[in-house]
Length: 278
Image (cartoon, rainbow, N blue to C red; front, side, top):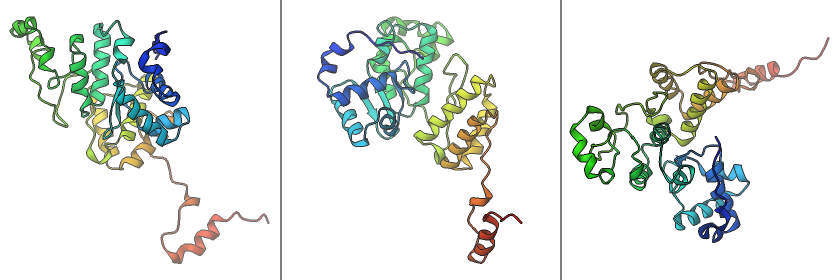
């Protein structure tokens, strides 16, 4: 996806005040492969370090500098970043078409447990983002909205809703134009790395025109939870690399498997050594 970079980026006073590394990090947050139009997305710091070739200490220092400058917020617990004015500069001042509004809501749904979500909605209250029941901020409602609350069921669901956080695992309405429900990840595999891997899997299925159904998502996530986070991520990466439509674990290489006990060592070494030609 293309990103819009204003010609005034390099003359902006906040940008000019940053150190060179901090400017590079900020530019990566806008143009990186995981960046979204909303500016809210999961981004482990090691990916920044790998992407632009900086050490972790410099990346952490840069993130702190950008937070201090009021240019971003960062949720360390879930590794979620919010580039505060990203949506403003990628749209006409935050004015959204229904399609873009749905895309922004989808972005928020992927990181729904982060405290940055209600902050984002407060900041862009005027954009009237149709985020699911439970996160709409009361200050986003105008007097006209309140008067129209009783007009239709649709408006009661998307506008006049008290700000009660969504409980983990609670059912919600579709978040995006594809009609996809937000993913409920079991605690045993709910890591930033798994979320990134699952997003890659979802994109892979979409690219090969094998859209995931809600039932398929439920069954696959249940299967992955039984593997643990590391094996689940490895299985997803293996399946994408081989173009599979289902998630399949890579087969272990028998030659590299250690023996079950010390008594098997000699036999295992003998089997592993290449045989001399007769």
